[in-house]
Image (cartoon, rainbow over all chains, first blue to last red; front, side):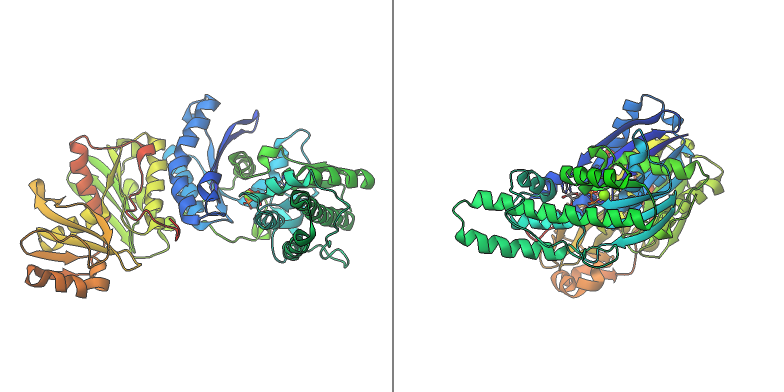
Length: 341
Length: 225
Ligand SMILES: Nc1ncnc2c1ncn2[C@@H]1O[C@H](COP(=O)(O)OP(=O)(O)O)[C@@H](O)[C@H]1O
Ligand SMILES: [Mg+2]
């Protein structure tokens, strides 16, 4: 079975084709980052307008790369939430209508399930059951995944998502949008010993997170230190490093706890922050101590893409799941509501 | 000529199938449910007529102006279906379709069509009956305040569309005795989109699925630019 996947939940248009026998055949992502950069954040109406321009050309491009006739596509998957509702509607409408015209089944995919399953596009792929850390711009969650669609929430952020904290802190440090990766680059030059930021909620049991305090801590530290430093560039790099250490350390502590709590030895990491190199290094070290394995998607599949939607769609469509002609994306959608396959 | 038309630009969601001269329509006045309804309507019309998508000459859609999200639903559905079935696409002005509908129901041949564009503005256009009983634009469509919209030079006119409910007073004041009648509660319907699309297609006016785009009129969607 060969499935076309379409992702339009936020500011990336993504398309991919996954084949049950041959794996991922092609994929392409168009990022709107330049459109939103001047506003310092995603403008939902502009995002929706751009998806209308980009989705079909991207589908055509990917199908051309696949090199097979359109008739060889057996199903269409589209992101049905969570995300920006106007943006989701574009991908859902194009995808559902395309499946209708082709006479093939369609399925709406949970964006975070797409992220969660993205490491399965790699070799070796993780097998169920596993513990998953989903860290993106909109989510920070620890889940126990028993099978496709059988997810139990272990803990989540009570305020800012980890990626959001990266982006907001980057803004405080005067870094260009989108700030997460820029902050990580700046942190590479920072001294990890100079400042120590708190590790929120690690001093008590439980697997929830809270990252919003860290940006206030950053702001206060920056104001205090800028007043007395002779080398502001160095200070900013050291603060960036301290912030990154705090987020990474917190995530690692909770992941270790989650693995132990679930008596599991497989950790899957997905979402944009999963591209962070220091996080990967520290999780690998923790896993070695715990005699566990960590699975990551390749960096380009950490952020939003159509390949992961095609893959999740393939998993569900081949199990016989499909949607009626009605499409109704949801801006909010708890993952635990997903049906098992 | 066989055309399947949709409109989701406003309060109503509708689909219409034109086969030769026979026209059938499905319409539901259910705002916020357009995504749930539109493909079922399209599919139902084809099934009822016993034909498949491939027997169509084109897909048509109300390309705006109207609700941004609504206009995008119609555009995206038509993009997907037209790409999948390799059909030409005819984008049709929702203001023109509204005027066409008013001619259909009231016989008015000089129509000022207006949707409420919020933020103190209207989507606005003037239409005159032309050959083939088709409404033709008498000026450019625009988004502007009721004080600023362009009024046609002479003659008497009828007003139609939701914009007249919100801004009727200012518009009445500006038109005075040149205003014959006002019908604010008429909606844009896909059967009128289909009729206008058939005329366009007959003249060779169509676009590819990828070229099918909404017309928002309002380009400024952020406070800074
Ligand atoms: N190397 C990195 N270090 C830290 N954060 C990163 C890195 N790369 C990307 N991010 C963050 O990942 C997020 C984007 O990931 P994505 O999965 O697309 O999120 P969403 O779909 O929720 O917007 C942003 O918040 C971005 O700053
Ligand atoms: Mg994402």
